[in-house]
Length: 417
Image (cartoon, rainbow, N blue to C red; front, side, top):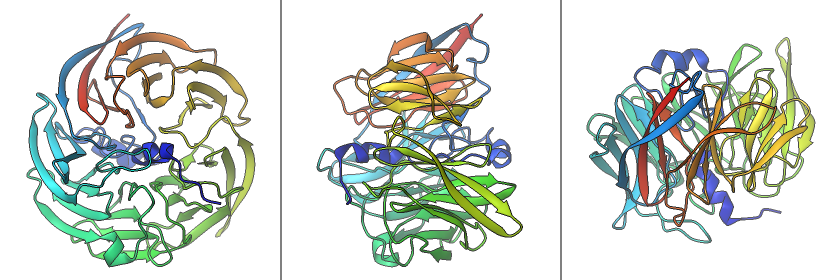
């Protein structure tokens, strides 16, 4: 049975967790420190900020600006931020100067996607910056490539009309994934479930349907046992496809089919893959014997569910929200180490610190990432607690960016011994 819950739409813009693309991320980190959903590695982590070694971290507000409704995260590249918004009946991709918070350009995505059943108006997907271009998917399924400097459209597809992609209940929410010279989209459906486009021309390089279901999950680019692959969480299974041609490498059925997939698979350093469903998270042991791959179901836990934001991995432990509680688990056994009530929200791992944004209070919390217990170092009011808060954090160049459906705020990260 498929259930449609209002909470799912809050997770749509937060659906990627690739691990293992460290080399590719490092080559573009200077120009694009947060180039896609959940950052340079797509796992909601970054390093090299003033939080490193900071005994007394600080957050100083730099600017605050109103912004139209959307669940899109802020992508950061070349001193600019890119996000989506709804304004006056039209959905847009916009560029924002990060020094001043002023809008630089906006490009229409089409008519505003109207919120329903607990959601809000506007785009759900997060823009992806790649080699001087911005790639964005509207909730109606319009997929655009834009010049990052000017916002000029370079090419466009309608996923529903051109590729028979079924519109999910809350609209298209998967974000584009850059893989070399291609942009990969999890469109869903029986004919073109996973599509790779030439990044320059927009021509379809390949398309496959290893699952016929549609959902909201963004693919994850990962290296497992030394082999780069695109890991996808569908509603009925988790699988990996070859970046070269989309060929199936491995696949495993999910233990239940309750709800639509929203949170993308998390690939751990030991090659295990975590797949989050509405009621639990399941681990899969991925092994390679010659040319043959196997995926075997392992431990399951109800303590990590299809939450709104990322699950972080740090030094063998997992950190993420389970309902109102921020929780720490042993990554191998799923044994809970501690819980802290922060009333739900979103997390990023920054230089060994958990940076958490509470969706209910609008507070930003900074705590040490440690299984020894919740060790908070800082708590700062960030967003209006009365507005829907459904978007992940972005961190780049000693700046923290947070948004909800009404405003976008930039903080400067500081810290001392």
